[in-house]
Amino acid sequence: MSRTLLAALAAGALTLGVAQPTLAQTEPPKNDYADAANWLCRPGRTDACSADNTTTVVAADGKLTVETWKANPKAKIDCFYVYPTVSNDPGEISDMIPGPEEKAVVTSQLNRLGSKCRIYAPMYRQYTLTALRAAVMAGPGPRKPRPNTGYLDVVDAWNYYLAHENHGRGVVLIGHSQGSGMLTQLIASEIDGKPSQKLLVSAILAGTPLPLDKGKATGTFKSIPICTSNGQTGCVVAYSSFRDTIPPPANSRYGKPRDGDPTKEVACVNPAALGGGKAVLHSYLATAANGMDPAAWVKGGPKIETPFVSVPGLLTGECVSKNGFNYLEVHVNADPADPRTDDIKGDVQYGPQVAADWGLHLIDVNLVMGDLVALVGDEAKAYLAKR
Image 1: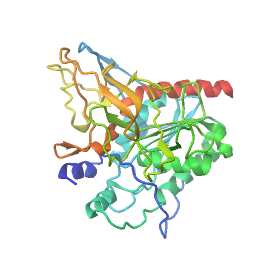
Image 2: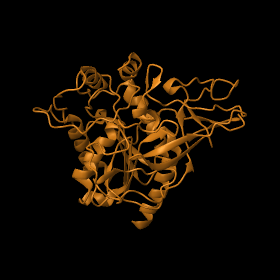
Image 3: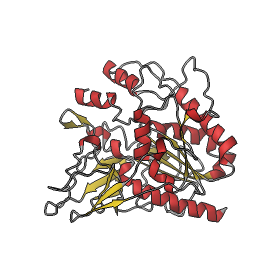
Protein backbone atom coordinates (compact mmCIF):
# COMPACT_ATOMS: atom_id res chain seq x y z
CA MET A 1 0.00 0.00 0.00
CA SER A 2 1.34 3.42 -0.94
CA ARG A 3 1.91 6.41 1.29
CA THR A 4 -0.88 8.22 -0.57
CA LEU A 5 -3.50 5.63 0.31
CA LEU A 6 -2.18 5.35 3.86
CA ALA A 7 -2.51 9.11 4.17
CA ALA A 8 -6.09 8.85 2.95
CA LEU A 9 -6.79 6.21 5.55
CA ALA A 10 -5.17 8.27 8.28
CA ALA A 11 -7.14 11.36 7.24
CA GLY A 12 -10.42 9.51 7.29
CA ALA A 13 -10.92 10.22 3.59
CA LEU A 14 -11.55 6.64 2.59
CA THR A 15 -14.95 5.08 3.27
CA LEU A 16 -14.16 1.42 3.12
CA GLY A 17 -16.33 -1.59 2.39
CA VAL A 18 -15.63 -3.64 5.49
CA ALA A 19 -16.69 -7.27 5.52
CA GLN A 20 -19.33 -8.37 7.98
CA PRO A 21 -17.90 -8.49 11.51
CA THR A 22 -17.67 -11.74 13.44
CA LEU A 23 -18.32 -12.18 17.11
CA ALA A 24 -15.37 -11.42 19.33
CA GLN A 25 -14.93 -13.32 22.59
CA THR A 26 -15.81 -10.35 24.80
CA GLU A 27 -17.87 -7.32 23.88
CA PRO A 28 -17.81 -4.06 25.86
CA PRO A 29 -20.90 -2.90 27.79
CA LYS A 30 -23.94 -1.78 25.83
CA ASN A 31 -24.49 1.86 24.93
CA ASP A 32 -27.53 3.64 26.33
CA TYR A 33 -29.29 5.12 23.31
CA ALA A 34 -31.66 6.97 25.63
CA ASP A 35 -28.65 9.25 26.10
CA ALA A 36 -28.82 11.92 23.40
CA ALA A 37 -25.00 12.10 23.38
CA ASN A 38 -24.93 8.68 21.67
CA TRP A 39 -26.65 10.06 18.58
CA LEU A 40 -24.73 11.89 15.90
CA CYS A 41 -28.00 13.28 14.55
CA ARG A 42 -31.56 13.29 15.80
CA PRO A 43 -34.56 15.58 15.28
CA GLY A 44 -35.21 18.77 17.21
CA ARG A 45 -31.67 19.89 17.89
CA THR A 46 -28.68 21.60 16.28
CA ASP A 47 -26.07 18.90 15.65
CA ALA A 48 -23.84 17.38 12.96
CA CYS A 49 -26.79 17.22 10.55
CA SER A 50 -27.35 20.97 10.79
CA ALA A 51 -24.21 21.84 8.81
CA ASP A 52 -24.35 24.01 5.71
CA ASN A 53 -25.33 22.31 2.45
CA THR A 54 -25.43 25.47 0.31
CA THR A 55 -24.47 24.62 -3.27
CA THR A 56 -23.11 26.45 -6.28
CA VAL A 57 -24.78 25.19 -9.45
CA VAL A 58 -22.30 25.30 -12.33
CA ALA A 59 -24.11 25.30 -15.68
CA ALA A 60 -22.49 24.02 -18.88
CA ASP A 61 -21.91 27.62 -20.03
CA GLY A 62 -20.04 28.39 -16.80
CA LYS A 63 -22.86 30.41 -15.23
CA LEU A 64 -22.92 30.14 -11.44
CA THR A 65 -26.02 30.26 -9.27
CA VAL A 66 -26.34 29.60 -5.55
CA GLU A 67 -28.84 27.00 -4.33
CA THR A 68 -29.91 27.13 -0.71
CA TRP A 69 -31.26 24.24 1.34
CA LYS A 70 -33.11 23.65 4.58
CA ALA A 71 -34.41 20.69 6.54
CA ASN A 72 -38.10 20.00 7.00
CA PRO A 73 -38.80 19.42 10.71
CA LYS A 74 -42.38 18.41 9.82
CA ALA A 75 -41.37 15.60 7.44
CA LYS A 76 -43.81 12.68 7.65
CA ILE A 77 -41.24 9.86 7.53
CA ASP A 78 -37.88 9.15 9.16
CA CYS A 79 -34.40 8.27 7.90
CA PHE A 80 -32.13 5.97 9.93
CA TYR A 81 -28.51 6.27 8.78
CA VAL A 82 -25.36 4.25 9.51
CA TYR A 83 -22.15 5.97 8.42
CA PRO A 84 -19.19 4.35 6.62
CA THR A 85 -15.66 3.64 7.87
CA VAL A 86 -14.30 7.04 8.86
CA SER A 87 -12.97 6.84 12.43
CA ASN A 88 -9.34 7.70 13.09
CA ASP A 89 -9.59 6.66 16.73
CA PRO A 90 -6.72 4.51 18.01
CA GLY A 91 -7.40 0.85 18.51
CA GLU A 92 -9.69 -1.64 16.82
CA ILE A 93 -13.05 -0.06 17.58
CA SER A 94 -13.95 3.61 17.80
CA ASP A 95 -15.19 5.48 20.82
CA MET A 96 -18.61 7.11 21.05
CA ILE A 97 -17.43 10.71 20.81
CA PRO A 98 -18.32 12.34 17.47
CA GLY A 99 -15.11 13.43 15.79
CA PRO A 100 -14.61 15.70 12.79
CA GLU A 101 -14.65 12.67 10.49
CA GLU A 102 -18.10 11.48 11.63
CA LYS A 103 -19.46 15.02 11.45
CA ALA A 104 -18.05 15.57 7.97
CA VAL A 105 -19.52 12.38 6.50
CA VAL A 106 -23.08 13.18 7.59
CA THR A 107 -22.73 16.66 6.10
CA SER A 108 -21.73 15.05 2.80
CA GLN A 109 -24.02 12.01 2.70
CA LEU A 110 -27.04 12.70 4.88
CA ASN A 111 -27.99 16.30 5.70
CA ARG A 112 -29.67 17.00 2.37
CA LEU A 113 -32.16 14.18 2.97
CA GLY A 114 -33.43 16.16 5.95
CA SER A 115 -35.66 18.01 3.50
CA LYS A 116 -37.66 14.76 3.10
CA CYS A 117 -37.34 12.92 6.42
CA ARG A 118 -36.52 13.34 10.09
CA ILE A 119 -32.97 12.12 10.58
CA TYR A 120 -31.66 9.62 13.12
CA ALA A 121 -27.96 8.72 12.97
CA PRO A 122 -26.54 6.76 15.91
CA MET A 123 -22.92 6.78 16.88
CA TYR A 124 -21.56 3.22 16.94
CA ARG A 125 -18.25 1.61 17.83
CA GLN A 126 -17.13 0.85 14.31
CA TYR A 127 -14.08 -1.02 13.05
CA THR A 128 -11.65 1.87 12.63
CA LEU A 129 -9.46 3.08 9.81
CA THR A 130 -6.58 2.65 12.24
CA ALA A 131 -7.27 -1.07 12.59
CA LEU A 132 -7.93 -1.48 8.90
CA ARG A 133 -4.63 0.18 8.01
CA ALA A 134 -2.79 -2.17 10.36
CA ALA A 135 -4.53 -5.20 8.85
CA VAL A 136 -3.67 -4.14 5.31
CA MET A 137 -0.04 -3.46 6.22
CA ALA A 138 0.19 -6.95 7.77
CA GLY A 139 -0.49 -8.42 4.33
CA PRO A 140 -2.28 -11.69 3.54
CA GLY A 141 -2.60 -14.43 6.07
CA PRO A 142 -4.81 -15.46 8.99
CA ARG A 143 -6.71 -12.61 10.60
CA LYS A 144 -8.24 -12.54 14.03
CA PRO A 145 -12.03 -12.14 14.14
CA ARG A 146 -13.24 -8.59 13.94
CA PRO A 147 -15.28 -7.36 16.89
CA ASN A 148 -19.05 -7.55 16.57
CA THR A 149 -19.41 -4.43 18.69
CA GLY A 150 -20.43 -2.08 15.89
CA TYR A 151 -23.25 -4.28 14.67
CA LEU A 152 -24.55 -4.86 18.20
CA ASP A 153 -24.58 -1.08 18.69
CA VAL A 154 -26.59 -0.58 15.50
CA VAL A 155 -29.11 -3.21 16.65
CA ASP A 156 -29.44 -1.49 20.03
CA ALA A 157 -29.88 1.93 18.41
CA TRP A 158 -32.49 0.54 16.00
CA ASN A 159 -34.43 -1.13 18.81
CA TYR A 160 -34.35 2.06 20.88
CA TYR A 161 -35.56 4.05 17.88
CA LEU A 162 -38.44 1.60 17.28
CA ALA A 163 -39.50 1.58 20.93
CA HIS A 164 -39.21 5.30 21.70
CA GLU A 165 -39.01 7.42 18.54
CA ASN A 166 -40.79 5.76 15.64
CA HIS A 167 -44.44 5.84 16.72
CA GLY A 168 -45.54 3.94 13.62
CA ARG A 169 -43.83 6.24 11.09
CA GLY A 170 -42.36 4.96 7.85
CA VAL A 171 -38.56 4.83 7.78
CA VAL A 172 -35.84 4.81 5.13
CA LEU A 173 -32.64 2.95 6.07
CA ILE A 174 -29.52 4.54 4.58
CA GLY A 175 -25.91 3.38 4.68
CA HIS A 176 -22.63 3.44 2.82
CA SER A 177 -19.74 0.95 2.87
CA GLN A 178 -19.32 -0.41 6.44
CA GLY A 179 -22.64 1.25 7.25
CA SER A 180 -24.34 -0.60 4.39
CA GLY A 181 -22.85 -3.85 5.66
CA MET A 182 -24.28 -3.19 9.12
CA LEU A 183 -27.70 -2.41 7.68
CA THR A 184 -27.63 -5.47 5.43
CA GLN A 185 -27.16 -7.64 8.49
CA LEU A 186 -29.80 -5.70 10.45
CA ILE A 187 -32.38 -6.01 7.67
CA ALA A 188 -31.73 -9.72 7.17
CA SER A 189 -31.89 -10.51 10.90
CA GLU A 190 -34.30 -7.98 12.37
CA ILE A 191 -36.61 -6.68 9.61
CA ASP A 192 -37.04 -9.11 6.70
CA GLY A 193 -40.23 -11.05 7.42
CA LYS A 194 -40.61 -9.41 10.86
CA PRO A 195 -43.31 -6.99 12.12
CA SER A 196 -41.06 -3.95 11.58
CA GLN A 197 -40.97 -4.65 7.83
CA LYS A 198 -44.31 -2.85 7.50
CA LEU A 199 -42.48 0.38 8.48
CA LEU A 200 -39.86 0.07 5.73
CA VAL A 201 -40.25 2.78 3.10
CA SER A 202 -37.01 1.63 1.47
CA ALA A 203 -33.37 0.78 2.14
CA ILE A 204 -30.53 2.61 0.38
CA LEU A 205 -27.34 0.52 0.59
CA ALA A 206 -24.57 2.31 -1.31
CA GLY A 207 -21.06 0.98 -1.84
CA THR A 208 -21.75 -2.63 -0.97
CA PRO A 209 -22.04 -5.88 -3.00
CA LEU A 210 -25.57 -6.98 -2.04
CA PRO A 211 -26.09 -10.56 -3.34
CA LEU A 212 -29.26 -11.48 -5.23
CA ASP A 213 -30.31 -14.86 -6.54
CA LYS A 214 -29.23 -14.73 -10.17
CA GLY A 215 -31.98 -13.25 -12.34
CA LYS A 216 -34.18 -12.52 -9.32
CA ALA A 217 -35.22 -9.39 -7.40
CA THR A 218 -34.49 -10.97 -4.01
CA GLY A 219 -31.66 -12.95 -2.46
CA THR A 220 -30.05 -11.89 0.80
CA PHE A 221 -33.45 -10.45 1.72
CA LYS A 222 -36.18 -13.02 1.13
CA SER A 223 -39.18 -10.69 1.08
CA ILE A 224 -37.61 -7.30 0.28
CA PRO A 225 -36.95 -6.91 -3.47
CA ILE A 226 -34.84 -4.37 -5.30
CA CYS A 227 -36.65 -1.17 -6.28
CA THR A 228 -37.79 -0.80 -9.90
CA SER A 229 -39.88 2.41 -9.75
CA ASN A 230 -40.05 5.57 -7.64
CA GLY A 231 -43.55 4.72 -6.48
CA GLN A 232 -42.51 1.36 -5.07
CA THR A 233 -42.03 0.98 -1.33
CA GLY A 234 -40.62 -1.71 0.93
CA CYS A 235 -37.72 -2.25 -1.48
CA VAL A 236 -33.95 -1.77 -1.63
CA VAL A 237 -31.58 0.35 -3.70
CA ALA A 238 -28.01 -0.98 -3.81
CA TYR A 239 -25.11 -0.13 -6.12
CA SER A 240 -21.37 0.55 -6.43
CA SER A 241 -20.01 3.05 -8.94
CA PHE A 242 -17.16 2.89 -11.47
CA ARG A 243 -16.05 5.17 -14.29
CA ASP A 244 -16.84 3.85 -17.76
CA THR A 245 -13.17 4.46 -18.59
CA ILE A 246 -11.97 2.38 -15.60
CA PRO A 247 -14.26 -0.67 -15.26
CA PRO A 248 -13.85 -3.09 -12.35
CA PRO A 249 -10.78 -5.32 -12.71
CA ALA A 250 -10.81 -9.02 -11.85
CA ASN A 251 -9.81 -8.25 -8.24
CA SER A 252 -12.49 -5.60 -7.73
CA ARG A 253 -13.90 -5.24 -4.24
CA TYR A 254 -17.34 -4.44 -5.62
CA GLY A 255 -19.71 -5.55 -8.35
CA LYS A 256 -19.76 -9.30 -7.68
CA PRO A 257 -20.44 -11.60 -4.70
CA ARG A 258 -17.43 -11.77 -2.40
CA ASP A 259 -17.87 -15.49 -1.81
CA GLY A 260 -17.79 -16.25 -5.56
CA ASP A 261 -21.14 -18.09 -5.47
CA PRO A 262 -22.07 -18.71 -9.14
CA THR A 263 -25.80 -18.80 -8.29
CA LYS A 264 -25.65 -15.19 -7.07
CA GLU A 265 -25.14 -11.79 -8.63
CA VAL A 266 -24.78 -8.35 -7.11
CA ALA A 267 -27.64 -5.85 -7.09
CA CYS A 268 -27.30 -2.65 -9.07
CA VAL A 269 -30.13 -0.13 -8.88
CA ASN A 270 -29.45 3.30 -10.39
CA PRO A 271 -31.09 5.91 -8.12
CA ALA A 272 -31.54 8.15 -11.18
CA ALA A 273 -33.34 5.42 -13.20
CA LEU A 274 -34.78 2.65 -11.05
CA GLY A 275 -36.33 0.93 -14.05
CA GLY A 276 -32.99 0.71 -15.86
CA GLY A 277 -31.30 2.57 -18.67
CA LYS A 278 -29.01 5.59 -18.81
CA ALA A 279 -29.87 8.79 -16.95
CA VAL A 280 -28.32 12.12 -16.02
CA LEU A 281 -27.08 12.01 -12.43
CA HIS A 282 -28.08 14.81 -10.08
CA SER A 283 -24.81 15.03 -8.18
CA TYR A 284 -23.84 17.12 -5.19
CA LEU A 285 -20.07 17.02 -4.94
CA ALA A 286 -17.98 18.49 -2.15
CA THR A 287 -16.30 21.59 -3.57
CA ALA A 288 -12.79 20.79 -2.35
CA ALA A 289 -12.98 17.08 -1.55
CA ASN A 290 -10.72 14.37 -2.98
CA GLY A 291 -8.17 16.91 -4.20
CA MET A 292 -10.55 19.00 -6.33
CA ASP A 293 -9.40 22.61 -6.66
CA PRO A 294 -12.30 24.96 -5.74
CA ALA A 295 -11.14 27.19 -8.61
CA ALA A 296 -11.20 24.36 -11.19
CA TRP A 297 -14.95 23.97 -11.61
CA VAL A 298 -14.97 26.76 -14.20
CA LYS A 299 -11.88 27.22 -16.33
CA GLY A 300 -10.47 30.62 -15.54
CA GLY A 301 -13.44 31.26 -13.28
CA PRO A 302 -13.69 32.21 -9.62
CA LYS A 303 -12.97 29.98 -6.67
CA ILE A 304 -16.21 28.35 -5.51
CA GLU A 305 -16.99 29.40 -1.94
CA THR A 306 -19.94 27.15 -1.08
CA PRO A 307 -19.28 23.71 0.47
CA PHE A 308 -20.98 21.85 -2.41
CA VAL A 309 -21.15 22.02 -6.20
CA SER A 310 -23.80 20.72 -8.58
CA VAL A 311 -22.94 20.17 -12.25
CA PRO A 312 -26.19 19.52 -14.18
CA GLY A 313 -25.70 17.37 -17.26
CA LEU A 314 -22.02 16.64 -16.64
CA LEU A 315 -22.49 13.06 -15.39
CA THR A 316 -24.63 10.21 -16.62
CA GLY A 317 -24.97 6.75 -15.14
CA GLU A 318 -26.34 3.35 -16.06
CA CYS A 319 -26.39 -0.01 -14.29
CA VAL A 320 -24.49 -2.44 -16.51
CA SER A 321 -23.49 -6.10 -16.42
CA LYS A 322 -20.02 -6.57 -17.88
CA ASN A 323 -17.38 -9.28 -17.41
CA GLY A 324 -19.22 -10.83 -14.49
CA PHE A 325 -19.74 -7.52 -12.64
CA ASN A 326 -22.90 -5.51 -12.01
CA TYR A 327 -22.23 -1.85 -11.28
CA LEU A 328 -23.25 1.76 -11.84
CA GLU A 329 -21.21 2.90 -14.84
CA VAL A 330 -20.54 6.65 -14.67
CA HIS A 331 -19.73 8.71 -17.76
CA VAL A 332 -18.35 12.27 -17.72
CA ASN A 333 -19.86 14.28 -20.56
CA ALA A 334 -16.76 16.35 -21.13
CA ASP A 335 -16.87 19.28 -23.55
CA PRO A 336 -13.50 20.98 -23.96
CA ALA A 337 -15.23 23.84 -25.78
CA ASP A 338 -17.22 25.00 -22.75
CA PRO A 339 -15.77 26.64 -19.64
CA ARG A 340 -16.93 24.03 -17.15
CA THR A 341 -14.59 21.36 -15.77
CA ASP A 342 -14.21 18.25 -17.93
CA ASP A 343 -13.62 15.86 -15.03
CA ILE A 344 -14.32 15.21 -11.36
CA LYS A 345 -12.30 13.73 -8.52
CA GLY A 346 -13.36 10.60 -6.64
CA ASP A 347 -10.88 7.80 -7.37
CA VAL A 348 -8.79 6.08 -4.73
CA GLN A 349 -5.14 6.42 -5.72
CA TYR A 350 -1.90 4.59 -4.96
CA GLY A 351 0.44 7.53 -5.45
CA PRO A 352 -0.26 8.73 -9.01
CA GLN A 353 -1.93 5.42 -9.94
CA VAL A 354 -5.70 4.97 -9.73
CA ALA A 355 -6.78 1.97 -7.66
CA ALA A 356 -9.22 0.52 -10.19
CA ASP A 357 -10.56 -2.09 -7.78
CA TRP A 358 -12.16 0.63 -5.64
CA GLY A 359 -14.02 2.41 -8.44
CA LEU A 360 -15.64 5.70 -7.39
CA HIS A 361 -16.30 4.38 -3.89
CA LEU A 362 -15.34 7.69 -2.28
CA ILE A 363 -18.28 9.47 -3.93
CA ASP A 364 -20.86 6.69 -4.34
CA VAL A 365 -23.47 8.75 -2.51
CA ASN A 366 -22.51 12.22 -3.78
CA LEU A 367 -22.84 11.11 -7.40
CA VAL A 368 -26.59 10.57 -6.96
CA MET A 369 -27.41 12.71 -3.91
CA GLY A 370 -30.05 14.77 -5.70
CA ASP A 371 -31.60 11.63 -7.14
CA LEU A 372 -31.76 10.05 -3.68
CA VAL A 373 -33.52 13.13 -2.29
CA ALA A 374 -36.10 12.97 -5.08
CA LEU A 375 -36.50 9.21 -4.65
CA VAL A 376 -37.07 9.45 -0.90
CA GLY A 377 -39.64 12.18 -1.53
CA ASP A 378 -41.50 10.04 -4.08
CA GLU A 379 -41.36 6.95 -1.88
CA ALA A 380 -42.63 8.91 1.11
CA LYS A 381 -45.68 10.05 -0.86
CA ALA A 382 -46.36 6.50 -2.05
CA TYR A 383 -45.91 5.04 1.43
CA LEU A 384 -48.19 7.59 3.07
CA ALA A 385 -50.83 7.12 0.36
CA LYS A 386 -50.88 3.38 1.06
CA ARG A 387 -51.14 3.94 4.81
